[in-house]
Length: 412
Image (cartoon, rainbow, N blue to C red):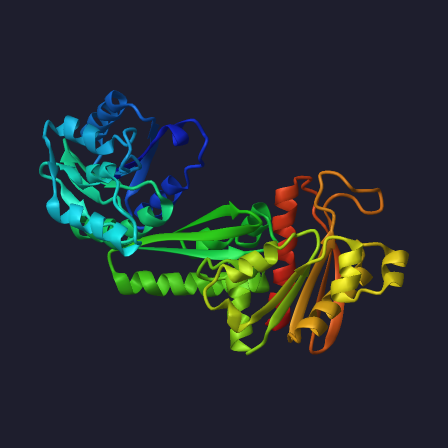
């Protein structure tokens, strides 16, 4: 069985929006043991959309389509699907009532254009959208089973995970069990990881090993299929245990959790709290930490002290420290961390000060220089690092990750 993905919309075709949906879909579908053969994209043109639906229906078993289910005239997926099957569009009164209720619950009146979202090709199976106004639908075109989903990522993911994946899984006539694992690492590049795990293929010939850069981390991927589920699980456990011994604390998560989530879990386990003082990372660490619901259990404060004056006034960094060492120095970072810990009353504090670039560097402190400090119950320590990427956004990401990793190692 093979599958393809079709992303629709002029904003995707032109590059105005990055297509994150297709990447998510591909990963989820391949976890079922189904090969994604192609990613396709077409703009808001009914004829072109109809043509590619017919083409995909001739050559592919499963097709996931995203976008084109909104209320506006350039949302053409339902019309193209109806044209491809030669079926009329039918108004579903139950769906229309749900859409009206969606607007009522938000104390808004429903625009007439939203009625279009309750129209479906005759013979389609409706896929409910629990968090939006655009229901999806599934439909057979040729040999292909099509699943039409909205383009809004949150809506698409929820519908894919809760409705589409279970339907596809039920339809599989496959004698194999599939298991995919993702192990997150930090501090080693792909080539270094491959070297450390060089013996893996010989020791575990039934498991395919892969590497995926997810900057600034690298993920180790394990793919396996077996006709016996118990054997599959045992082999995966043996393989993961072996990898843990080889990589040690370079492994940040065995379940592909983000670094900030891993750190949050450790803080919860230790019933400890955290404050952050940021300069060059501009609040990125705090943003990552607070992306998780319930982070108030351990996260107390963030201070983005970009200027020297702010470092002195808010964090109490001594002026003589700044005069002697400058803003980017281990001693300054240490004073920032101690200040954040003192002001907030947190058990731990981390601080960052550096040069994200692309300008502002010097021979002594080039772009990519970062000083990170950690203050905790046993005192404070600080260290300088250098990451020669030269791109501001990349530097900020790796600075923030390195700071969280320093805390992760301390908590371990």
